[in-house]
Amino acid sequence: MMLLAPLLLIAAAMGQAVAPAPKPDVVIWPHGVSPLGIKHKDNFGNHGLSITVHDKSGIAEVHQATADIMIVQSGEATLVYGGEVIDAHTTSPNEVRGTGIRNGTSVHIVAGDVIHFPAGMPHQWLLEPGKQITYLAVHVEEPTAVKP
Image (tube, one colour):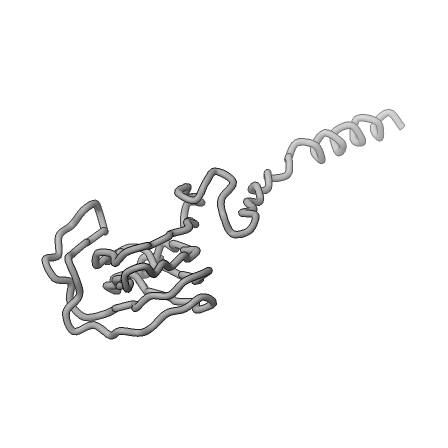
């Protein structure tokens, strides 16, 4: 009996020694907009979220280390992708910008369309005067190649 009590205390202490791992906070953007404003970008380590509104044509962009998934919420535009970036220059690590895209593919994009750009894919939005496009972007870091 005297041996049983210390064993029960040790067992109870061992059960309390390992605390459960904290769960990450859930982030909710009511009506598709961050509570911190439309310009806010949330970064979750290997992925991020942002809302982008274009009311004029944009520059050519290449994200060399991240894939983009875009869910168009409203508006319309022409999307040019692929091809070669004109006047390409590095603006920050793994980010290239340019004045346009040569020999790219053009497609008309409207609300409800979902687009996936793999890392390294040039893309550019072209808007007609008076038009606008708004989309939710999910930026996902591409995993590095696993060596055998």
